[in-house]
Amino acid sequence: MCSIPQSVSEQIFDHPVVICGSYRGQERAAETVWFGSSPEYVPALPLAALDSSVFAACTGPDDGLADASLAVYDRKPSLAGNGLQSTKVPGSIATDAEFWRQTSRKAFGSAISLYDTSPVTKRVSGDPIADCFGLVARGNSAVLAVADGVNWGEKSRLAARAAVRAGLMHANSYAALPDALPDTRKSLSVLLESFTAAHSAILRAQGGLTTLCIAAALPLARPPQFAVCCVNLGDTFAYVWSKSRGLRELTVGSHDV
Image 1 (cartoon, rainbow, N blue to C red):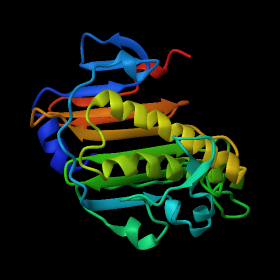
Image 2: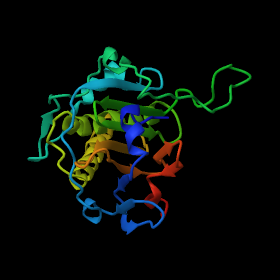
Image 3: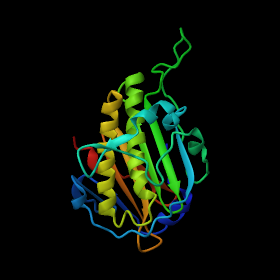
Image 4: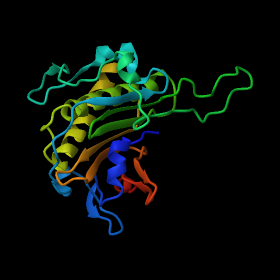
């Protein structure tokens, strides 16, 4: 479970909210949700400058993205050519476990297994947990990702961790720069690029299969409104919860399979 920073959520849910997802190019009448097969299907709503200061970062389950063995896969396809380039960019996500211990009540994550415990081995069935989540919260934005490794085992867990790590690294490299995301359409394009980076990371790691969902909570140019841009693959969905409006799904366009 991942929470949008309270500094964002306290404002976003008391005012009109725009939630963008890249799906099929329709607008639901009951909510302000756009979705389409590409970013061009959603409006290019102007965004405010981003605050690059990180106040929370967490991952899981267990060491999650802080797994030092993932560092060997920290290369991504170059957007300028066919080769590979290093991900050493401002604000890039570190393997250092201390980075992922920046806790806050405003932005946090938690994971628990729902599998039964074997009466013979006393171990949880499906161990190791093949799912993974990570979030990086900044002064006025947050990037969140979760992956559900298909089936279980080391290959599935590796796929989920590699996907979340590479996807977050790409999205986070833009969130760390004040003017890198001018509007919601560009933000969705970056999230789609994150999936390319995630896919490449899985192939390099020789991992198994996984779902993936990446979302970014971003400030609109007209305060105090915020937009949540989200892209997902598979049956891992994203939701927004508020005291006044209850639970709403962002990924409404991904159920028609």
